Image (tube, rainbow, N blue to C red; front, top):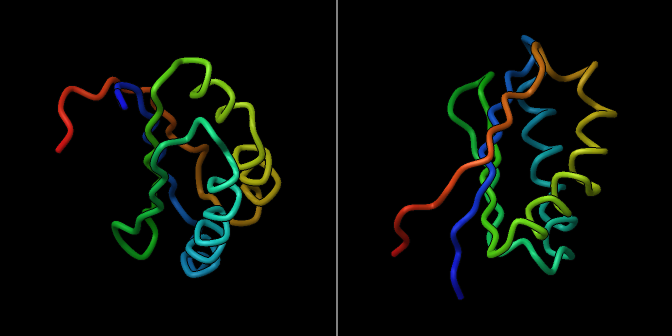
Length: 98
């Protein structure tokens, strides 16, 4: 396995919406588990209002399939209610893995 590509998405919850955003992200695990090309998928909490997602992929096709998949669609549906700003989504290259 050669994991060399990733996505880092940082999300800012509206005041009082952090728990709901966290619950939404926890629910995303089942969607990510069904994606063959997504090698790892992490949802994380930085603070009461800052959350994120980190995913890894072996190929650009797999990364693009994820970016065009169900999790971004679901996030788009809840974003107006839960997010204080547009998600900061960055495609990244993995330099080293343990």
